[in-house]
Length: 234
Image 1 (cartoon, rainbow, N blue to C red):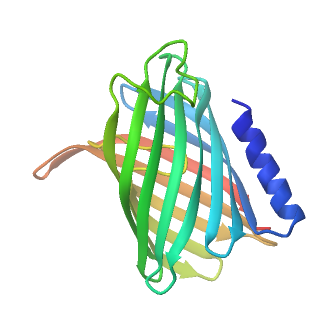
Image 2 (cartoon, rainbow, N blue to C red):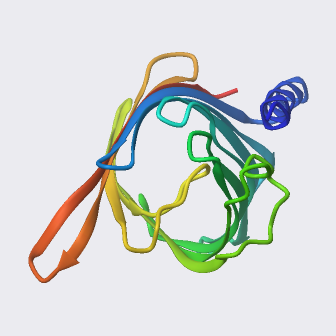
């Protein structure tokens, strides 16, 4: 789909022209899930501050090796509902594609979040998921009827435990981001790091995995996700 990509470019260009804060990012990554898929990802995203406390975000990821072509894209909005208690609302819609399997998924999610202390963010919500198993329509973001639809809980815990000079380091436990969502039986976690270079440029890195088969003290690690990118504040 070229529409999401063009939309992101136009948003970034328009925001820059009108001095609206915008943060584009480009990254490369690798995802490996044993017995499922192994692929490289090239992703682009942008977040635009439409007004204080109101942000529009979107992104697109392309895959190579397994399930080549479009992997994910989505768009959403985040708004501050209450300044005093740092209550926020996040809404987003997303589309996933698996070209080799001729399958896709469309979903809509909403979360309420709070920031109880500096550097700690918590959010909880629900997602409606509509898997598209029709081999002729799996690539369409407009198919919301499904033979196996479902509701899932979505959650986010993000703790920035190191913030010194130009560097930040954070730990997270979350089953969604602006592009993807995990299945309920997975418990994704990882680390996120950032380093300011100069003139608004920033290097970002993210390393993640998930726990599967959690039972008593026994568990098995699932996928491996590695992402490195660069962003710019305008």
